[in-house]
Length: 147
Ligand code: RB5
Image (cartoon, rainbow, N blue to C red; front, side, top):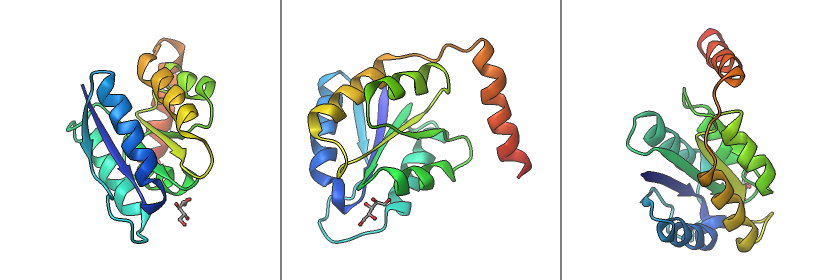
């Protein structure tokens, strides 16, 4: 299973920690950067992660910026992406189970590495439940197609 990862300059250290953690769980990581410390623009990396997921190059994505907000907005501009900013594991787990989230985002300036690992683990271990949730996920896609 492949995980696309992307981040801006605020989150290089966090990305590297989470990348090693995810690889340790047995996943392959496609790292879209940035790996340069110069200030950069999160939309580029969010789009790359989102595209990798919807194009099927990766199964899921993890995108990190200072707060997780900017990069999640960029991911969500890619049709078919359901990116969620999570600062604790409960939301992360439920975002997979109920919302079929396909990109996990968090803020390198908001949470610590150990919390980020716990969030990532719960998110990766959870599965989409389908059933009654599918109608709502379909409604999200319908909004995306109509607006
Ligand atoms: C960069 O300064 C910061 O704005 C960015 O990492 C992110 O937090 C935006 O949402």
